[in-house]
Every structure is written in C-alpha cells, then in structure tokens.
Amino acid sequence: QVQLQESGPGLVKPSQTLSLTCTVSGGSITTSGYAWSWIRQPPGKGLEWMGLIAADGSTYNSPSLKSRTSSSRDTSKNQFSLQLSSVTPDDTAVYYCAADQSFHNILIINPGSWGQGNQVTVSS
Image 1 (tube, rainbow, N blue to C red):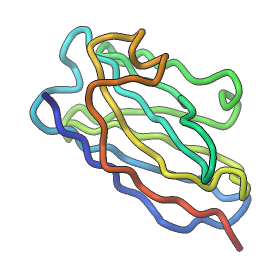
Image 2 (cartoon, helix red, strand yellow):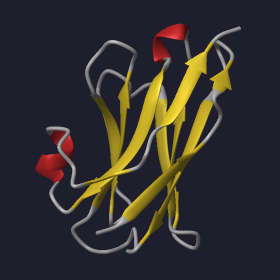
Image 3 (spheres, rainbow, N blue to C red):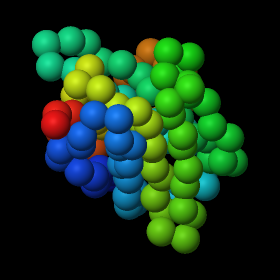
C-alpha cells in the first residue's frame, strides 16, 4: 500500500492561492490504474472531493471548485499538487491527499490510502 504525506502552509490570507503537495512513497504515481486525489474537510462538515490526477496525468476537478483549482504532478519527485485560488475563510479545512486503484472509490470518497492531513486556515 502506498504512503502519502501532505505538505503546505497552515495559514493563508484571503484572496491568495493555496498550494499543497503530496509526496508518495511505496509506489509510483505513474502506475497504471491508480488515481491520486485531494479531499478536504471543513470544520464541522463532511468530506469534500476536490479533484484527482490519473496515472496518465489526466486531471479531473470537482465542478463546484473547477474554476479555482489546478492540479499538477512532478513524476521525478513522485509528487502531485493542488492549487486553489482566491481562497476565502470558507476554504478553511483539513486537506488530505488520497489514492486508490479505483476511480469509483475516489469519487465516493472511500480511497484505500490517505495522508495524515494538512490543516489550512484562511484568515487575515
């Protein structure tokens, strides 16, 4: 099973762009069939799927966030990243990277592998 570790800021100011990176070990992000995803959980709310990068580099983002999200990857570092622009206090959440060999499991927010989470607070 792969291991994932998020890295990123703990505090972001409103209107700025949030950048998060997930470092993967125990497997390659180019392994066929895998999907690499970002999920967040605002305080007191449920999990929200944000987007994913497939093993071939294709990206899919949540329609509700599509205009503000951008996904990328660095295969040389075995990392994938998320940028969320124009953040507001409503973007305060714990951000998780996750992975599964099933796109379905990703989309129903039940991936087999999770990072520990990165708390992000949006505040001036």
